[in-house]
Image 1 (tube, rainbow, N blue to C red):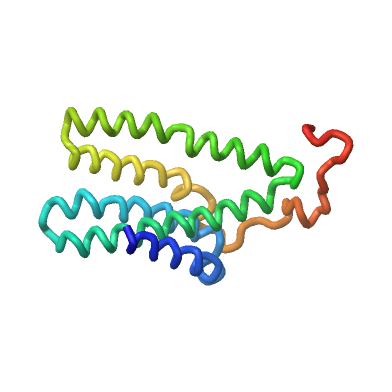
Image 2 (cartoon, one colour; image 1 turned 180 degrees about the vertical axis):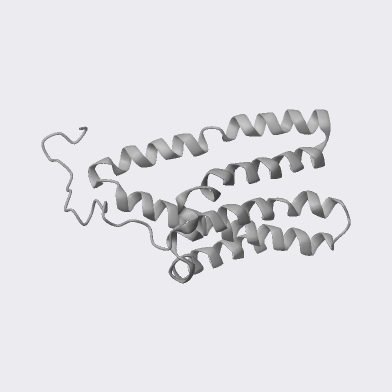
Length: 167
């Protein structure tokens, strides 16, 4: 877990340089794909084909690094495009969509783990991580070095309305 935390710190430090090097748009699908590969480390370690501790450490670090870079780039992009007066609603909606299914997934994973075993259930998780990356892998993002700025809400001077803060 400590190695995973180091991976997260490295992700925080490397997000901006990576997105400048390969491009903002390309870093989103790259890191989404890396999450799927990293998720495979845990069930892979159970096969005994690789050194267990090293496999878990590398997988944990890569997973945390990829998640942090992905989030930094895509959240920055979303916040750049959203008018400031709508940032709270946009962030709340995204959090609901992303964090809301976690308890359902945890319950489902526990049931599957009980019925089919832990390692097969972990492989199902790897497949789901890979499937979750498909929309961004086949989106225009993979061919975009720089994400659009012409819609940059902050550049337009769009300030929150003082007369109706809930609008």
